[in-house]
Image 1 (cartoon, helix red, strand yellow):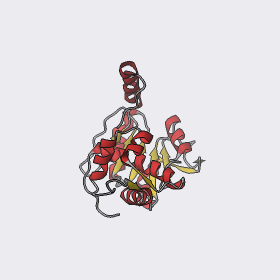
Image 2 (image 1 turned 90 degrees about the vertical axis):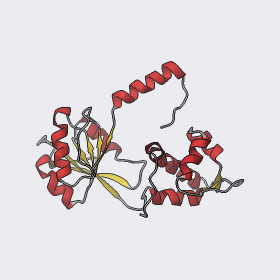
Image 3 (image 1 turned 90 degrees about the horizontal axis):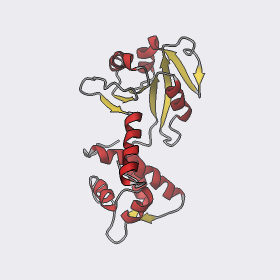
Length: 216
């Protein structure tokens, strides 16, 4: 994948949404779309969409809008949709099992290819097509399978210790579902997912702003 310009975090989080909707449009045979039409469909204001796209240069034409196929191909390259991304799941409890059952069905280039758990009754089994390994095999399997992204769904009290093991195994990115804000060295990125915080934020917007859809 070619080197992309640095963009704001909020813009980066919107890119997969653009890609999914452009895929839908392309499959439906739509040739072009305006920023206003995109805005109506995905509920980001048109100015935000134009600003996001502007970070990548001139993607549209004034008076014409955006060529759907060209834009789809461009964002496929930006998001590296042409290559398969293997992800490890650490913790095969209730949340981990839900994630394995889902296994990124909406994203064809990502999959959970290995899971790890301390429960010996789970190790050595296959769940939703994903092999589960013992935690003692973490570094060996991460290295052998060349996995450098992990999803963390473990109890809070062991989150930092397991994060340290993941860093030692060469992980470069962690999607952290635990309440603990883990510490990692420079060069490793952590994305925290706090479901309680997201629900509280949703309730706040419902109570104060009604049913208006908010952007990222």
